[in-house]
Length: 120
Image (cartoon, rainbow, N blue to C red; front, side, top):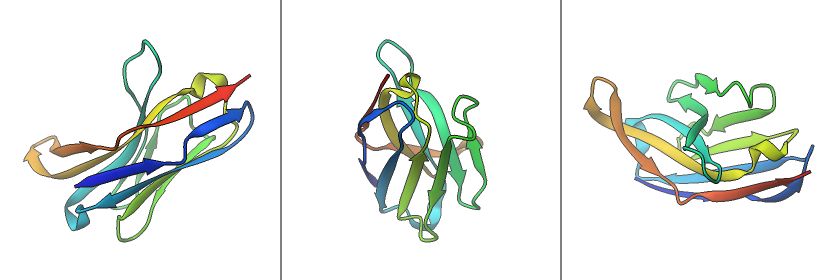
């Protein structure tokens, strides 16, 4: 499974950005897709996930502002970010959980990360 993220950049507070992640080699064995972020000096944290059935989950800090979606073929996962605040500044990583590894899920694959910077 290979992931290629794009769409980061510099935006003023209150602005919007759209992150895209192209997925190849996943297919029907994808369990869920998601976005994580890591700010300087902080641990990587969950932003949003979407299951193969379309169920979504969001971090409390981004609810009502971010929307995760994917196409039916699971070739891409998109994160639409609205009303951005400086605290959203981080490197954003797309993630795919694939196949079966144990009872908790499959194997995790990661994109290369894309920088999002929100200026005040």
